[in-house]
Structure formats: structure tokens, C-alpha cells
Length: 261
Ligand SMILES: Nc1ncnc2c1ncn2[C@@H]1O[C@H](COP(=O)(O)OP(=O)(O)OP(=O)(O)O)[C@@H](O)[C@H]1O
Image (tube, rainbow, N blue to C red):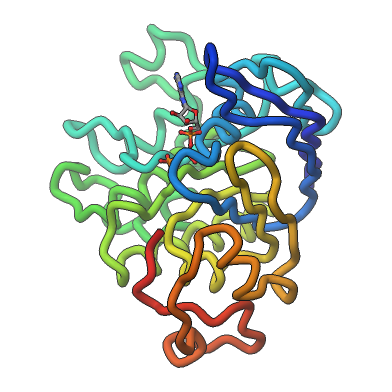
């Protein structure tokens, strides 16, 4: 299990302050990032996986700066970024690219361990039987599950996902989130996932971080996520029984199942 530590993170793009003085720590949790469009969620995730350099502050994973090339994060993107002409298996295997030389990966001479990891990852997301199917022939939900498998092949100690279900219908979104949660559980890693769908977030999250205008508005556990906090974050959202749709032992918040912010 790894520890992500973010201290006083600020990111500016010229005159625009995307993140300001954000600090929190994650250990052994499935954490959901919430916030309106432009709140800074993508910028935060990009800083954590080392794609974007912070203006100020530090981000460490188990004490090592995430800017180091051996940082162990695996990222799932909204648009999955898969290679359409390759099978699910070969797409999953591209998660091992940073461990292979270009020549080896061009000829798909991956290590036996990488190949096994790709098959295990596809099994984790319920796609072992479809391993040799071209991703171009798969549904959006299946493609996103391949995206999760690829992230797992990176052998991460932290899973990151930037709006992984934003372009899916509600039923596929739920399935993909179930597999993402399963992936984090099976691999015993923490996850930091930005979501627009409040109902999906409330169902799957164990902890919730709310960003507004680049600042941290709240950082609460599941039992502490209230309609008031959601309203603070998004303005008034109509509330009806979320528990009617999901079998929730402990409803975190009552939100209209169709609400997407
Ligand atoms: N590369 C960039 N150059 C300039 N400004 C940027 C860049 N990336 C993001 N921003 C600005 O930073 C702020 C935060 O953007 P960010 O994409 O992180 O928000 P977000 O919460 O992920 O939004 P969304 O949900 O719409 O993706 C916005 O004002 C955005 O316009």
C-alpha cells in the first residue's frame, strides 16, 4: 500500500490559477474528486501523474517525487486513448511499454511476466474471453475496461482516473466503476478518480475531495458527505432517494440518480 502526499500544491497557467495551495494525503482508499467544470480536477490528476509540473508545492508517492520517471501511477483517461487496430490484449500490453525497449515493443517481444500481467489485468476487468478482439469492435464500456487493464499492467501503486465514465450511459458507467473499484481492491492500491456524476461518486467513493476554483472546499469520509456539502460545491441540486436505485447500507447523500454536473 502506498501513500500519496500533496503539500501546498499550486498550479498557474499564465494568469490562470488552476490550483491554489491544495494539501491532502491518501493511503489505502478509493477517493473521488468532485467539482464543477474548471475547478482544477484534471490539473490535479495531471500533476499527480507527472504530466504537468506544479508551479509550487510538492507531490510525493511513498516519499519519492512523482516527477521522477520511476513514479508508479497508472492513469485511466476519459477517451481511453487505445490503439483501435490492436486487440484488447495488445492494448493492455502497451501498459508495459516503459519497461520495454522500442524495438522489443515494436515486435511485441514482451517479457513473459508482462504477458501474464496483461492477461491477469484483462481477467480483473472481466475481458479475458475477449482478449483477442479488436478494441474497435468493442463497446465504449468494454474499451474503458481495456483502459483500466492497461493501467494495471503498469503495475501501479496508485490508480488515477480522469472522468473515466463521462462518455458512457448510466448502466455502462456503473459497470466500469465496479471494475475500477475491483481493480483497486485486487491490486491493493489506492485510487484517485474525478467524476461528474454525483450519484455514481456517492455510491463508489470512500472519501470525497471537493475542489472549487482551484481550492480545497472539503475533504470528507463517505459518512460525512451531506447534501449541504454537495449544494455548496455545485449550487442547488434536486435531491431524491439515491438508495432507491442502489442498495446502499449507509447512503452518503441523497441525490437524484440522473444528476450529472
Ligand atoms: N493547458 C492549460 N492552459 C491554460 N489554462 C488551462 C490549461 N489547463 C487547464 N487550464 C485552466 O485551468 C483551470 C482548471 O482546469 P481543469 O481542466 O483542471 O478543470 P476541471 O475541473 O478538470 O474541469 P473539467 O471538469 O471541465 O475537465 C480552468 O480555468 C482551465 O481553463
